[in-house]
Image (cartoon, rainbow, N blue to C red):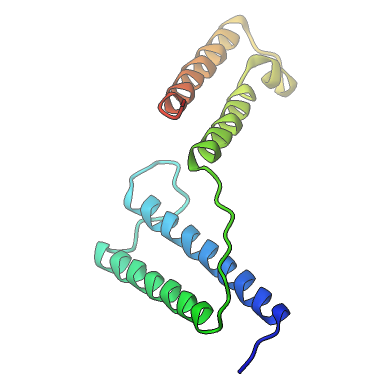
Length: 139
């Protein structure tokens, strides 16, 4: 059976989409295993279930790769530096921390001097931690 270039393109696109969704699910499994008050998901997947899911995800990826190889479809993935991606996300974290500042909160009501000082302290504490997480990524 011969697939035309458009068919091949759709297969690759769909497989990349599936891979991305699997990666998101893997990240959710990792997050579920970690305790965080900010987590949106309850941790109701056992370690054995998580391992079975990861194994199944690997089989799905292997089957997709075998399909591409069988039909002589190259998998041309543009790789992006993980370091660069993480640094970019850290910039968005800094932007979010900037929103904690008194000048932004003023739009929600007047801040007393004590509240302004407290908000600035909170912002500085979180900013310091965010900056610290980015330090290990500097080249």
